[in-house]
Image (cartoon, rainbow over all chains, first blue to last red):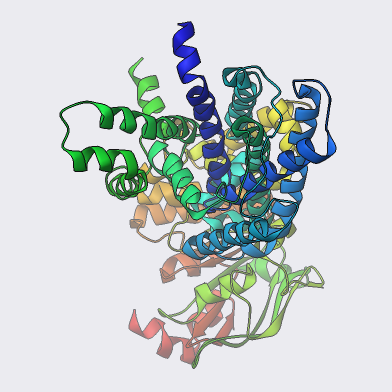
Length: 307
Length: 263
């Protein structure tokens, strides 16, 4: 057991963070808005934590103080939230694929800026981000409560006035407007909540990965997060959480598959390096055969009816 | 029809002044002016493509007018957005039903209570006052409305699984949840048989009295409109060709030529 956690500790934490990132994409999707901006906010949150912990909160103790980590998460969340409002108000005037394109552009803009600023370390990035824990597995003390709290909040959100306004907009924006719901306000709110979550996760990830650079917030990441939600399920918060966990673990599973003996060389190579191709294929297959993802609210409904 | 004459002096609640809407070269609504009195059932009829639904869309701010004014209780409302129109107390149903299909009947009605509830992100998620009591009240009111349209026993069914006529009634319940002053009904009797149409006539009249509503309705079925409405406006090719009590409109030569003659 100890061995298992020592070997897979890093993967387990990555899976939890993956679930959180899935949720950050799911929030705007609750209002029907396909936003791919999460990696941008994730990268920004990471840079905030990386810069603060290496340049501002330098401490002499061997472990980085946890209250400071929480403070970084707060600062990252607030900053990303403000940026979310600023970006969201104009961007959410766009619909469907145009919003997706605009948010991809946003992610790219942030990436190029981070590549060219001194404070972000340029292309090299920021190294030696201090560790608040002895082992990587201990990051669960931060990541797991965050995931559980987020899940409880989303569970509640789907059942209250605000969440219902989100869902009404997703179902029919015009009708929602006619029912007195201000679509712009709630779309920006959902987008901003997703931005805050992505920023907070970024702040944890910067410490967790020990290094942060412009490769963290890329178009590739957008597609991967999108896979979390599209395949996991876009109609219930459990979908993106489970999607995020499974698809974070998938490359590791593929890698170990590739290492099993007897496979032709090309297949092993493909399993090792073809991650994005496999994700892309899964998105296509998923949208054709499971348009609402694998985990849909109907699953729970059916279970309830059978009892 | 005698009561409508006695209401002739009652206050005007909604007034359109020279409303015009162009779609490219097409004048969908052309210089239309009329006023609707409080507590009136106002019919809007005309052949297909006459501009009736466009007029509804103008009133509810779904589309902006090319020119003209819209006055609601003394103030100009043409620059408002749909949710602001709803907040003023103008609710509508849709010709091509626009329910939230994936949601239950009850949720559809609850969503329309949005303006009359206040809980926000924080109080809602944490279940702090006023959210819990508000939630209970909202549920109860929504169930009452479903009861009113005869759907309370199917409150948990998805709206998209309802029969056409039931969906229309659910849309009315949803619109009523806004506690409107004016209710716009876009072809409420579409797809109903004569018996159901008769019931609908009585139902609409009872709604008006019970909720003290002003009702504007679009309808193709002429006997229903003639029997139900206090006044009728007739549109043809975007123009208002007649306006008045059913007995007057029925005998208007322009109306007979444009519309009734074809019946």
